[in-house]
Image (cartoon, rainbow, N blue to C red; front, side):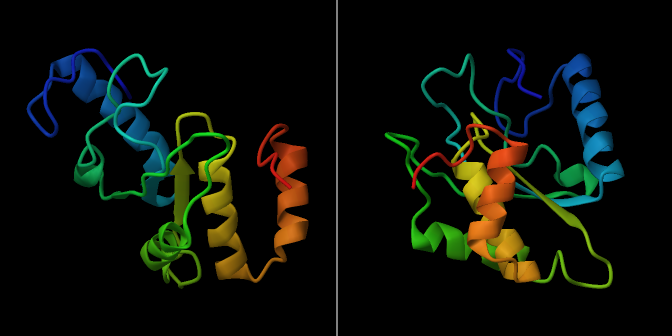
Length: 146
């Protein structure tokens, strides 16, 4: 959903970009995503342009939170970052009206995977070692630190 035509956060955007937002938002809604967690900064090294504004998906009923984790030398979320993530996820994945949580970052191998694993361990009481082993099989290269 990143596009060179983004002028300012939450400002009116060109018609094509609004259509692209709806297309991706439809995918998120159809997938049952109720919370979108972004673990990267708005402008990181290697990004061609700034990331999307935090309010982009609010109009589609999708909550958004930013938990910005520095990605230097295998950067990991701080305990308070994990706590913030779990606070935002509280009740979303286990309730009767269960909704999914989507976690992403720029690369999708470290920060987001680790935060997603923490949410799964907390909500479903899955052992961390088993979950990290499964993740490494499903997403080779993910969470390569010991």
